[in-house]
Image (cartoon, rainbow, N blue to C red; front, side, top):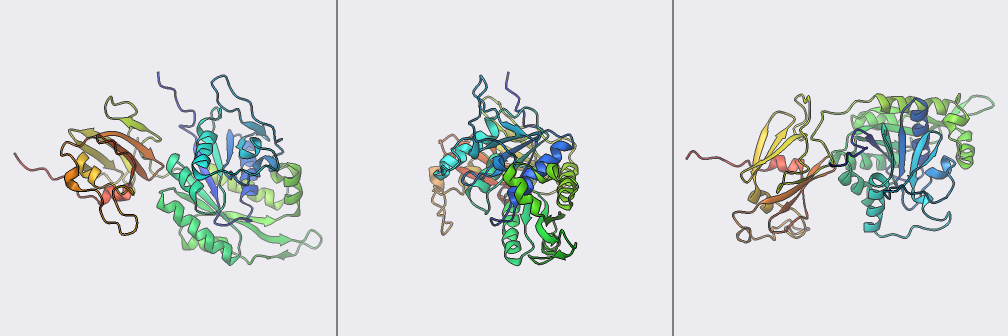
Length: 388
C-alpha cells in the first residue's frame, strides 16, 4: 500500500521579501506562534539556508535533531511550533558553503524528510530575493500562497514588487502584503514617528490588486525578545505589534483557497497507471490556466481546465514543443530539435507536477528535462480530428 503523504492537506505558505533587512523572519516566527496559540498545528521551514535565524528567535538550541527509525528528521519544537533549520545542523558560527544542487537537496529534505506529523499550516521562511531557492520551492511543492513582507520605504517597495511578480509567474497565489516597521510609537509621549515613510505597503497592495494584510509597528521589545528567544506575541502579548501579528495570523488562517486544481504533488507512470493525479472536486468555472483534470488515451494527453474547456495534445507534438536548453537555443529561442528526428510513434512515459504552474514529462526516447507551463500548454493548437 502506498504511503500517504502527511502534508497532503497542509497549507504551505511562503513568507518572502524582495530584499533583506525588512524583518521577514521576525514576522514568520511571530505569526507562527500566533497561529499555534490559536489552536493550529504549525510548522516552520527556515529556508534561508545561508543565513538561518528562526531557531534563535524561538529559543531553539543549536543541537542536531534526532532521527526516527525510518530515518526521518524529528523537528525541534518551541512555543507550540515545529521547526527545521540549517541552524540546527551546523555549528553556530559555521558558514553553509553550498552550491545550488546541494541547497535544493536540503530544501527537499526539510519538507519531505521531516517527521512533521499532521500539520494545518507549514510556513516557509524564504531568503530575500527571487533566486534559486524561491524557484526551487515554487517548482517542487504545491504552495498554497505567498506573503510578501516590506518596509514602507520606496526602495523596499520597488523590490517587493519584483517578488510579487516572480510568484505570479510561477502561479503561486499572493495572499497579501505586510508592511513591517510601520512607524515608531514613543514609549514616553506616545508620538508616532514614521521613520520609513508611511502607507507604502498598502499603496503597493492596491496597485498590484492583492490584499493588504496589515501594518506591524516598530517596537523596541522586538530586538530584546528575538535575542532572548522569546517571540513578541508571547513576551508582550498586549503590545500593538503583537496585536498586529495575531491579526495577520488570523487573516492567513481564514483565507480560502483559489479554485482547486489537480491533486499535487504527483508523479504519474503511464506504463502502469500508478500515481495518476486525482481530479479536482467541486470546481466552479474559474481561471483558464487552472488545470483540474488530466488523462491520457491513445497517444493523446487530455487536459481539462477550470473554465470548462478540454484540450487534446498528441504525445509527439508535446515532445516537439519542449522548451528545454537541449531542444531550444536559450538566447534566440530557435529550435534545436529536428522534427524528423522525433519518431511518429513517440510516447509519453511519465508526467509529474512542477509546483502549481507546470508539468514535467518524460518520453519514450529518454528525454525528460522539459517543463511545460500551463500557460504554454493552453497556447498550443489542439489536435484536429478528421472524419474517417
